[in-house]
Length: 188
Image (cartoon, rainbow, N blue to C red; front, side):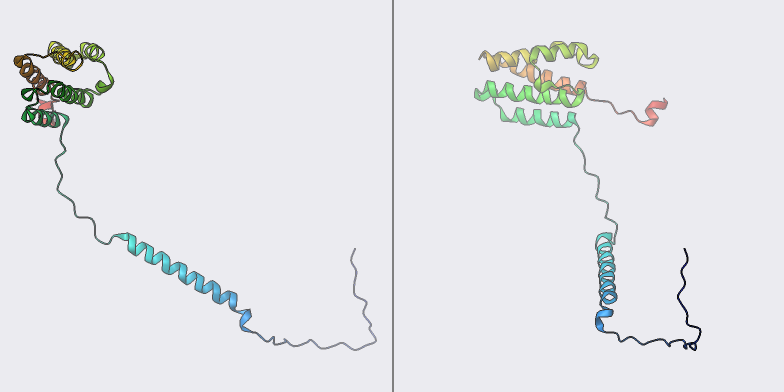
């Protein structure tokens, strides 16, 4: 439905009203000023943040530090154990505890076997099944069983057994050292 305004045609037409000037106050512009200040603050913060975190200069490359391999670490620990001369000072249990800890840590790192959590029999069973450790099964068996006797049964191994256990451990570590294959070696 369309409705019109009633018009009195007997009266003359009125002229168009001019544009009226409205008085403005500072309150009319407060939103523009506040928004502008907020935008400028935000821009300043973003610029500061990126300049601060840019870093400017690329980091100076540090010389590569030598990372100790499990074999090097184990041989170093064996030398330190030998220098302590524990069994010579009648600390047989401490000597075999440290020796087997070094050996088990090496097996754990080198062969990815949880050797620290395994009993001697379980570790020897794993060694029997592993092709690299199978070659050294007799030596591992001698080391671990002598250590168990000294640690738990309070046995007093002979001096030759101490040196044999140490030598077998050192030989096992040296013999199972992983070989590094380079491109030139692979092509030949």
